[in-house]
Length: 175
Image (cartoon, rainbow, N blue to C red; front, side, top):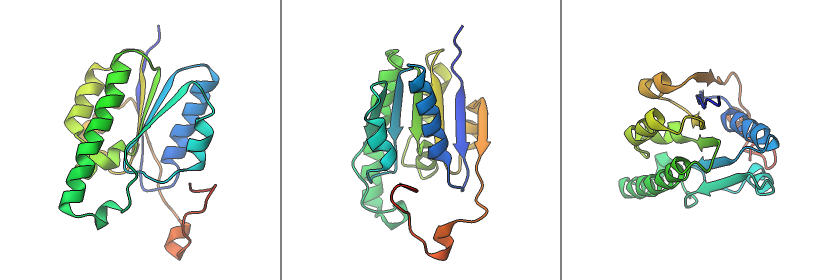
């Protein structure tokens, strides 16, 4: 019997998305169908370029963000929230149709914490998701309710980060 669980990769350290991408590669290598849905991200990354070569993986992304959320006006945040709602609905509808074995909702935790994604809609889906669907949520600041819904919780903590010394994200390493 195939049982899909709920996983959370959270914390302030580097590697949450990287861990989820490792699981995507493992699943694709076993011919599982994967849906990656990204929130709060905009730039093209090396991993997205690579994933496009895997026929088992479908990627959903919204419009590219041109600002960090702390730089956005209330109106811009409202627009992002509307776009994220549509994106989440598309992803969850595809999964309810039984087309996927693994769903990765990258940065969903941060989007929920920032009120740019409807946490209750996400929780409702998690409670009634298809039995065989594995779901991975990544990001910072998961709520107690999301932590409670999860079967796995892995926290990645920052001890040091190059950004603290003014070193910006490097192509091929951080993106």
